[in-house]
Length: 486
Ligand SMILES: [Zn+2]
Image (cartoon, rainbow, N blue to C red; front, side, top):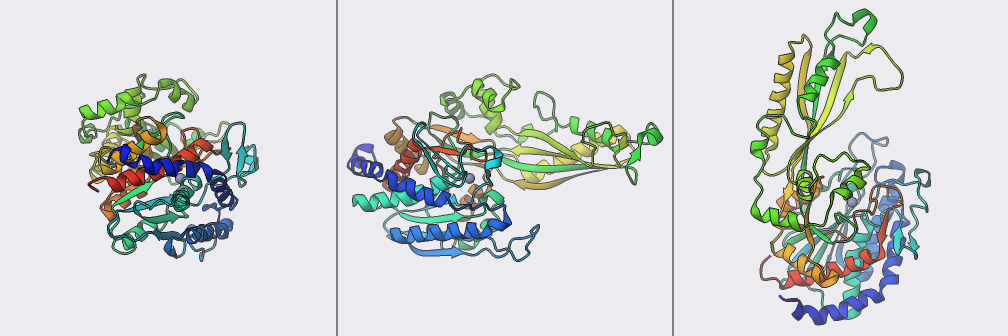
C-alpha cells in the first residue's frame, strides 16, 4: 500500500503521539526508577517488580491474557540456589483472525549502574535534560524506552480513536543482560501455544549505526568460542632452576595462538574462507549507500588502528566476514612486576565471529585440526588440547521482504529518508530462536542512536528518537498490516 492511503491515519496518529509526549516520558520515568538489574541477585525482587509494573500498564491499556510466565530457578553459579528467574511478560492486544499477528520482543532488565561508575546524574532516575533534549537514565535506550514504545503506540491509537492494525503479542523478558536464561526454552514451548499464529516478530533492541540516519538491521554475526590448553610440568616452576631444561607450555601456546590470525586480521586457518558466502551485487549496492566513515571507526576505537580505510571494507569486515580475536591466557602470569615463573598449564582463549554459510561443527573441526597441527610442528613433549567452549549461530534476513519493506516505508514517512540497511558484528541469539521456532521473519527495528551508551555510563535516549521511534512502530505496523504477503 502506498503512503497516500495511510496518510489520513498518520495525520491523526502522529499529532496524538506528540500530544501524549509528557505522559509517555512519565511512564518511562516510572519504569526507569525500578532498578531491575538482572545480574545482581539482591535486586531480583526489583526485576520482578518491574515485570508487575509492566503488567499493570498493559492491563490499563486493555491488553488481555496477560501472563507472567515463570521460568523456574536460576541455574548455577548462584549464591541463592532457590533464586527464581524473573518472569517473561506475555500479553495480547486484539484477537481478530482477519488481522496479522505481530510479536514484539523487548527486555525490561538493565545493566548495573552506580553513581561511582562516573554517572553525571542518578542512573535510576530518568532525567529530562532540556538543554540536550535527552532522556538520561539506565534503561532509557536499552531497552526500557523501546519496550514501553510498544505500549505507547497502543495508547496513541486508543486516544486518537484509530483501529489498531494488527493483533499484538508482547514477549518482554527480564534476563536479557544475563544470558536470556530460560527464554529459548519458553519460545520453544510456546511456539504452538501462546505464540501460535504469529506472522512476524519485531525486536527493538539495537541502535542506529551512527547518530543521524535511521537503520533497519537484517543480519548478526554468530560466535564460536574456543580454548586451547597446553600442559607440561605438574606444577608452576622456577625459571632459574628449570628454564632451558624443560619445554615451556606458554612458549608452545604463544606459537599456536599466533598461527591462527595475522596482524592484518587475516584468519590463517585453512578452509574457513571457502565457507564464506560470496558478496553479491545487491549487497555492494547496500553498502555503498550506508552513512559511515573511517573517522567514525577511529572515534569509536579511540585510536588510529583501523585495518581498512574504506567504508565498504570496514563494514563488510565487521558484518559479513568472519573475524578471529585472541582474548586472553588463563594460568599465565599477568600481574605487575617481574615474576620468574614457568606456568605449568595455560589456556589460550579465542573466538571466531561467524557469518553465512559457515557451519559451526565443520568450523570447530578445522580449528581443532589447525591447533593440533600447529602444535605437532613444534615437536614439543607437552600436551595440547583444543576445544569449543560455546557457539551461537549467525542470523541474516532478506532486507527486502514484506516486514522490512513495511519498516522502510514507515521510516520514510516518519524521518523523510530511506533507512540504511545494516548488519551487526555482534550477536542477539534470541533473534534466530524466534525465526526458527516460530518460522517467521524477524525485523530488528532500532529506536536509539549509536552513541546512546547502552552498557555505559550516562546512558541516554534522545527525545526525538523516543517520539519518532513510537511513530515508526505505529507506521510500520500499519504498512505491514496493509502488505499483501506476510
Ligand atoms: Zn538490550
